[in-house]
Image 1 (cartoon, rainbow, N blue to C red):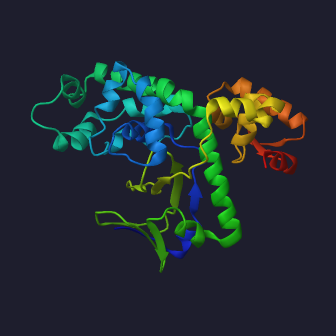
Image 2: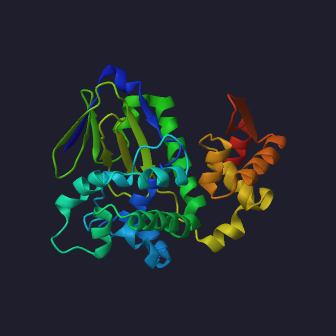
Image 3: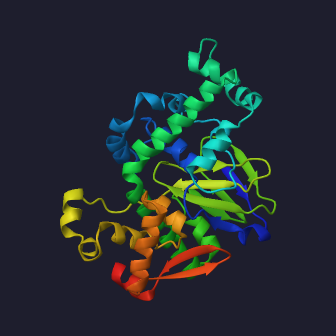
Length: 316
């Protein structure tokens, strides 16, 4: 069992990630390529994504163990949003940390690339950065709009749970293997582990790349619980293209923008969700705002887009 211990303060510090952290999403997606990941959503995604894997992605895939484990340095804490700042931080990982996290788990005979990475070789780090970029672009990129839709839909469902029944009900209904009792969130697993929040709060993030809940508890950081995202009805792409009235009315990208904003977002965040440029996201938001379908708040130099009641009715 994994037991996450809450204080009264922690209940008020439960928050959702407005979008997945890019390196963690890459790591979880790479992990999902393993046949050991057995959820329906994961198997469906693996059938589509497996053919997109390229040899250049090897340095990343070598860091994912057959059991799905990956080293902590692969998902560093980053102050700035976006993939490139995260890769920059990854490439700055001290060599002794890489050796400490990888060394004890490697066999005596290892691949030359792993030997170069353990040795702190600059070319090995650059190859890892390139592998992450290629994976993000070619494996995750074609699914970006659908992944954004899944994330937004899950957050919308959880938000309604909070509004209707409160935070404790939210925690109790995250997953069938999760239970809530006496300020302890218990997750059924084969191993024993306790996470004591002690006022740090808890971050939550849905993911279609996990079959069970996964916890990340790193010193000095707010713990993260990644749980399986809700599964939306599967629609054949040809059927969706011919029957999507919203896309016919607005255009596919603007329909995707509207659906993505079920969870409000800034312009850059919206662009990342849909794998489009910031300029394109800004222009689509402008058109939708002029049509009365979204509002934009501007404060401290940042924009924040959210749906209007008319847009919510349209989506329904």
